[in-house]
Image (cartoon, rainbow, N blue to C red; front, top):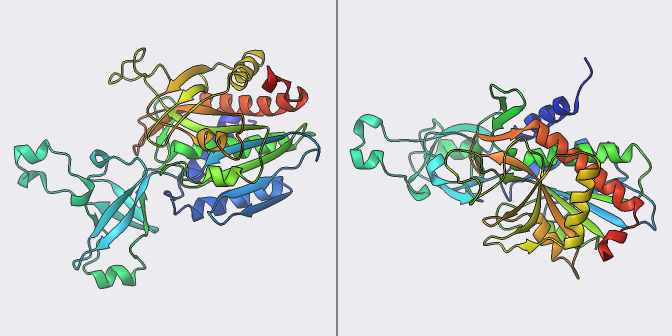
Length: 363
């Protein structure tokens, strides 16, 4: 049986999410992405921040399209090592205290667990209390700080969830850690592969960026190299289609309805209003190729599109995002049909932008 886009993307998401790379410690995922993208491009390089740049070629006098996906995930760093060998934690990105207790974790490649007081010993009040991260600890099964250091663990080492990608009862829906944004990385890898198979109507740069989860830190410096005519940030976005969210008034985004075209976004990191011509171009392209899509405003978050949009003298940019449930948890859920539709839309927008000569930007 021939491999489908869903099959390929399923495998790519699973293999990329299995790697551990919280913000500031993305080396393993950047190395894997470099190996994957190098054969498809003219040149690759990793800059001083750790961002991966892939020059995909195209006519030298053609307009430039920049495709971006952040490679980091939420997690923690080792804050300190106690004499008895337990590790204290420093949060990186939007990881939630309430979802840390009792979890399996990877500490610089070694398996550990975040300890939890025995239920038999917890008072009723303790059972109702969410412990703050300062009170949590990792147990590596080692008995002293000496054993921990001998095992190669040091302050500042990465701590991430252990939660492999698995299929739900609906096999097109995957759950696991780091779907944000390894699903976006999988889309970008596959977009590059599809686009370089034919003659590119644009100059194309793909960048896999670092430290998005801690404030969109990597994308701006990475994009500063290029002054692109159009940028697309490929990311994931929270869903509002579960019983604990008011869909219409809080977050009208659902699994299975296609990629989300963000008209605006905002968070503590800042936000952006997507240029009207770029948003209209994305909507028109989706409609012309028959891709289901959702248009939304994300009030509580932002994407690398924001950092790229404000780069240099300004870049026309948009976030094309994949719906995901259970944001910033170890059991994020994504629908492969949405991932495939996102891939098709990104590829179509890149090709169409070159064919139209970017006339839509002055519309």
